[in-house]
Amino acid sequence: MTSSSTDTPAPVLVLVPGAAGAPSDGSAPFHLADPTTPQLSVTDLVATRGDGVFETIGAFDGKPVNVGPHLERLARSCSLLEMPEPHQETIAAAIDAAIDAHAAVPELTVRVMYTRGIEGSGVPTCWIDAHVSADWGPYRTGIRVITLDRGLSTAVPETSPWLLPGAKTLSYAVNMAAVREAKRRGAADVLFVATDGYVLEGPTSTLLVRRGDTYLTTPVSAGVLPGTCVNTLFAALQHEGHEVREELMTVQDVATADGAWLLSSTRLAAPLTHLDETELPVDHELTARFEALLSGKA
Image (cartoon, rainbow, N blue to C red; front, side, top):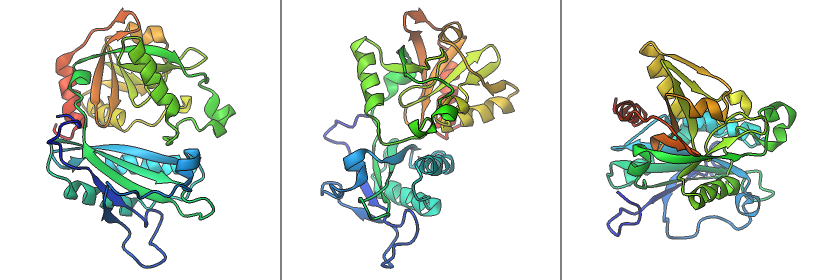
C-alpha cells in the first residue's frame, strides 16, 4: 500500500478541544473535522515556534497498538515542556473515533498532535490525523544506516535539561535534515551518536541490538525517547528467557553485534544490513517475529 495511490482512502481529522479537560463551553471534547479545510490558527505557538509535542501510533487491521504507553509518553513530553497535562482518556477515545471513521485498511498511521495553543490563551490545541501508512515493506526487509553526530553528550539530561532530550517535540527540522543527509549518502536512515561516543537512537526510531541471547537498547537516561516498541519486545523476549537491558554502546558495539534493528510504531522492525560501511547479519525469521509482536498479531 502507498499513500500516493489515487485509490487511497481519504485521511481522517479529529479535533480535540477537550484534550486538557472538558471544554469550558460544554461542547463535546472531540469531533470529526474536514481535513481539506484549514483548522489551525496562524497564531498557534506550534506554527510560530514549533512549540508542541506529538505521538505516532500504528493501527493494524483497525486495532491500535500501545495506545496507553504512547499517551503516557505524550504526558511525559508535556511535563518536560511544562505544558498542561493531557487528558489521556479523552485522547484515547478520540483515537478510537479517528480509526472508526477511517476506511478499513491493513495499516493506518495515527498522529496525536498537542501544542501549547494560541499565544496568550493558555489552552492547548490538539488534533488527531489518521491516514494510510506508507509502504514500509522495503524497510522491514533491511536498511543501510549511517551514523551522524547529534552534537550532544549522554550527560545532557542532567547538565542541560532545557535542551529537552527525551521529549518528543514537534520541532523536528533537525531530525528530518538528518534523514535527508542519509539519503544523500545512499542510506535509508540514521543512527545518532553522542559527542562522548555512544550510540543513541534514530531520528524517528529506537535502537535494538542483539548480542547472543542478550538484547540491548540505549538507556533513557542518555537522553533518548522511552521506546514503546522496544518495551513490547523486551517483555516478550524476557518471557522467553532472554536477557534484556539498557546499556551504553559504541558504534563498534553495534557494528560487531549479532543483529540490530531500528524500531518504530509504523515501520515496526527495520533490520540494519549495514552500519556505515560495515555489513551486519540479518535474521529475517526473527524480524518477522518482531513485526508480529509490534503489530499486535503475535
